[in-house]
Length: 275
Image 1 (cartoon, rainbow, N blue to C red):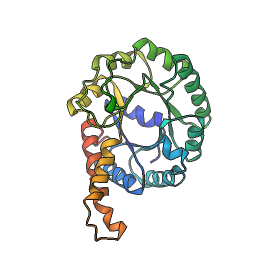
Image 2 (image 1 turned 30 degrees about the horizontal axis):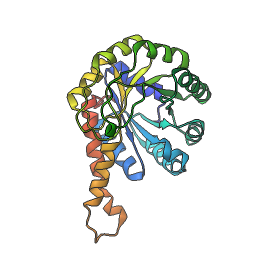
Image 3 (image 1 turned 45 degrees about the vertical axis):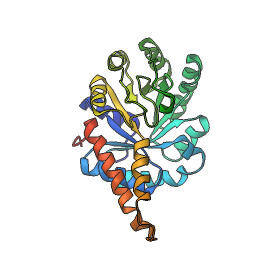
């Protein structure tokens, strides 16, 4: 079942859990994620990174996700992740995306608001909702962040842009951590109480389970996973018998490893058996 971003996150808000958002890159990662969602009776968001959209990969990848969603008995949202600009947004919409993230977090507050608001207006005509980012979520290799999204800034950003989802900087980063992060749980609670947008936690790979559960209890409703999914897939491919050449057979174990990883995160996020 194909859902838009607002519909799928409304389910999470009502149920008090978070929807897992997995970045997918090919048919095999799509299959692993959708198999996990079906088995666990969990809603799921499948994301295309902006690079895949602007390079033309999504022209072929998006139809695979949409067909998987059409066949699925669980809600599925096709989402642009970290949209780099208007070109990525327009291509993703043309590809059938039902959720859009625009990332202007490196700009000034005023420019972030203005650019994000423009994307919201473009997407509104297609019945698609937008995720913005406030407080730049950087790379784990650069260390853990020491600054967090301010509550008053979040209130203003949501009010002036009209976003339905908001990625906040509360202690995570993208990639593999050198040390486990400690999330700003109280800040999540404060922003959740003060705004109407569904809160998003980026950089989910490597966050300890107890921190994830605390973040969800505080108000996180979407959590992103990419790095660990990629490792699950790649490490399994590398372990395959080099003498085998039937690609469809070789890919069975990597698909199973992606499914296993997705199931583990569905369990932690509390989205299992919600559908």
